[in-house]
Image (cartoon, rainbow, N blue to C red; front, top):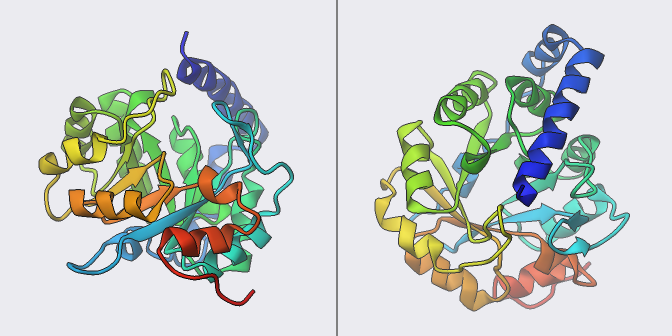
Length: 266
């Protein structure tokens, strides 16, 4: 059993409990009555010559790192990230492994005007509806956690709820699966979710397979402006950064530094 297997086993139990607690028809109605989305994919698309976009992540803990910023207030972190120039925010909502909460999306959304990505292990259309109802503009779909038919179904569900799906891959075969399923926002996770080992060359390996109209995002292990620049040269429109920023005294200042800028007024 891998770490990912353990997480997915828990997630199946959580989804069953959520369905038992609130009928799909009810969560679907809430999702369809939600206000307009903020356009995650549109915000992340980088015109030629423009700086690499940054998805800044609200992340209290992880299985690989343990506690990162216990008790962090998602609204306060969201405001600090906005000050630091984040293009969008990723919000961890998994409780057991990442110390997240679905309610963090609403708190972050009320604090800033940036598009929000729900980052969790989404395996069921119920969670996609739940994502829209909770205030997100996009949803993470992990190829390693899904069969090809499931991935196609969940991409279609995301579109039905006007959500942008960030489809996450870790190798060329997964990238091909994602693109065949219709992914238009592709994330390359440099961390293997089965072993938690890191390979920072993956975005550059996968980028040549990615059509020019697909928005490419590099994820995990990004620590310096040089890392961001290298991923931009490789073809990434955006990078997703969490732990490096969340460990800093000021996540907003750390984001400015990552973007090659001096700290601004708080």
